[in-house]
Amino acid sequence: MEINITNAIAHEVLEVIAHRKSIRAFKSEPIEQDKINQILEAARWSFSSGNEQPWRFIVAHAGSVQWQLLFDHLAEGNQTWCKYVPVFVVTLAKKTTSKGNPYKHAWHDTGAATMLMAIQATGLGMQLHPMGGFKAAELSSALAIDEAYDLVCISALGYPNDDLSALNERQQAGEITRSNRMPIEQLLINI
Image (cartoon, rainbow, N blue to C red; front, side):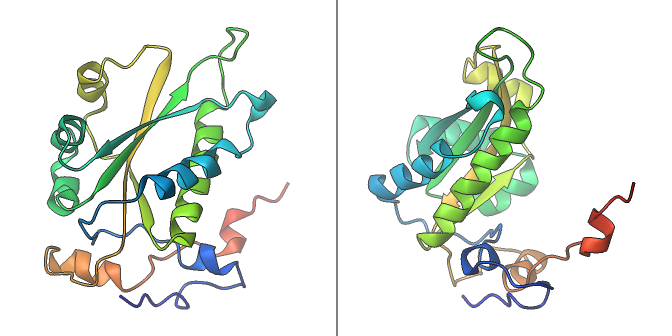
């Protein structure tokens, strides 16, 4: 599948960043454990406040009880396109530092680690699509997540699929274009 990567990029970026996209059309083929390890290794090397490394992950493969549990707790809109996703990655953030203080940067740091996973996945010919659309409280309970952690997101991980027939018309259009981004001028706050 060829993605139009030039329609929204105003300034040159690394090729792996230009090709990163939150796709919805995934091949159902399994992902090699070595590649999953490489993606997790990328997350390990993310920056974090005080080197606390608050991120934790749960990896669930299609066909497993854990995968089905995650799928069942996705928002209905995400379930429509996630049925062929070979791997889900649950991302958690530790709420406190190693000294027991509130970790106010935990979600920021965990987001950075998640982005490194997405970039690594793209470099390996895959895509990682983080989702916020899921029943967080119910899923935390079903997974018996320790209260020391926040459930941040569930990401779909897999190889892109050129066959878009499993997607609705709007989703198909989104697979071949990039979503709009605010111009840099709107990102900057002048003080």
